[in-house]
Length: 350
Image (cartoon, rainbow, N blue to C red; front, side, top):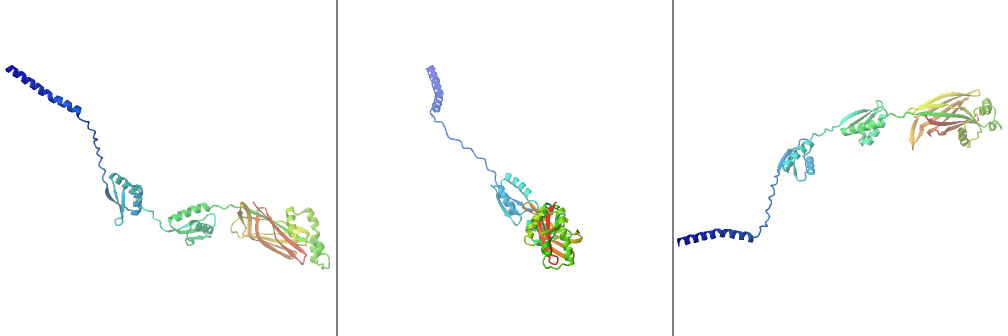
């Protein structure tokens, strides 16, 4: 009996030992899988804080505007009492902002009004002064010129002086020097057939003039008038009763072009037959200008004065001639001698 009981206990213990394992195996086979996602925890954002930056040189409002345009995620306020800006940003941004302010908060250039005298080396001081007034758009009272010393004085700020110096370097350049050659053709004109016919009294002067006209034929054959002169004479003498012409002289007048010159004078004399002709040629303020790529010679007045056998001839006119052009200065008639004088001029730029 004891053996059976012992065997039975051992069997029971073995059954009990096996039961939890089977139960666990059934539980694992029947239980559903857990599909729940584990949430990811975001990192804690870096906290923002406010800092006050003192602005030493520039305007706090200007610096604040720059910061707002450069850093979109920061908040910027100004404090005019302490001349500063208050910036709310993260630590890393504050470092960059500090470097930015250090870069742009620099001392301003002091732009004070000063008086500067500029030496004009090539052009006329008054011409440069008028040019600067137009280009710089400043008051004429701030610019004065001294033509004697050839100096331009400007009262202005630094930026104006900088621009003025640049313009002066650009426009105060040496003038192009040109020489003008003016050739005058002094022509005695008359109609001896008309004059010495009829009832006109023959005086000693008339006889003297007749001797001059008698020499026309010889002079014409030896020194014929240039074709261009003959062409001009046809246009002029169509309104006059002259048919005989004698070239008295064809002097040259040379002048170096200088703006604002007082003019050029040439005196001379010529001999035709046995009579002397004295003449004076004058040009006032001779200058050269350029229009549409063509140069022209200009003078407010070109005048000719001739003394022929006691008879005075005077004529003059403004001069505007293109290079190589020819024009008549004027004509003058002496009734007492029955003669006339025609003055023709041509201009060349050398």
